[in-house]
Length: 434
Image 1 (cartoon, rainbow, N blue to C red):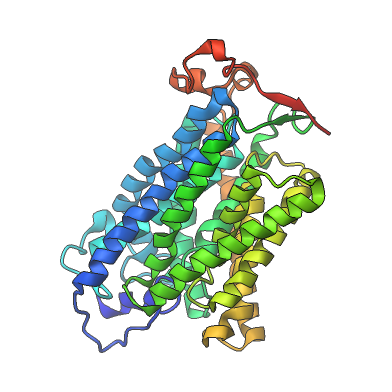
Image 2 (cartoon, one colour):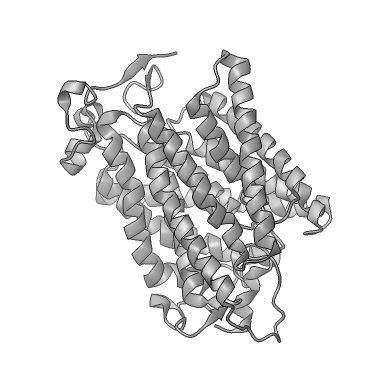
């Protein structure tokens, strides 16, 4: 890789610019940290599978989890074949990378900063994987598994990779405009959030929604999944420094305090509204805090990270209460928790980056952040709508009503999450609601 390709480390995946006349040198400590960070981020997707699985009905738990698990296989291969090159390929333009690194050609002996380019490519693959898995939460219990796979393949190559290029490549137009997104607020959470909302609109609501509510069948799974997400998110954010340095340390600390503040804020809202703070609320609040701090984690001080967590939680909590008015059945509140928190985090990055001396003057940086948010919403939203319509021409997007009511596991995978039918876990879990 040439030195120009190292410049994305300035704003986004990294903390310090590399001068064009600086020859990169391999650092084994940085490499070890990045190998560990990549593994941490990979763990996030199984963690998300547990988080999502616990929130659904018992008879659809495997299908819900499989949408996350299959994202690892699908995106892992596609990223190697073309996704990485479309995002970071040498010689690209403002909108898309080149095909110079198709099949990861040309990376064998290269360095990205102080780490092997292969390690950077692997780390980035983990980001692309969980971005797709996040979308599944909006369409669980009604989308055909095959349709999700086809949509996911197209989304990864045609939506995610170009957006990653815009924000994190030296050639990308949002990068050149000075948009601040350290670890994926726009590229991952806003993009996945709006794509999830669009998918919920296109597929239509679950049978009985909103009159009947689908209750979480296993709250301990939700808590376990949230804990694994928080653990892996340390590598997600701190690893984006691409080095074991002060920038990574700041991102790591902020990834602790912002979700902690968000969780307490969410529980406070719940207690004020219903008098009962819930375990699902605690898990949701900390995830929202993780989302909100992601774009800002290396650009704000720890006290500012607390503000990001609190305001991100407030925005998402309000969006969850408002969601029924949208008319879309976003099953697991992907847009409210990832899209809205991602938007809040991106804008708060612009408002608070001055606390570490980053970015432009606040009004100018806020405008740049707003442009990046709108660009992500439009690109991912319109693009996802078109891709879903294209997939619907090839195959139906939705399962038959009988399979939806009876649960997705048997019909899609010939398996049950809970084999003992005498427990009653195979029965639909509905409660009356407004």
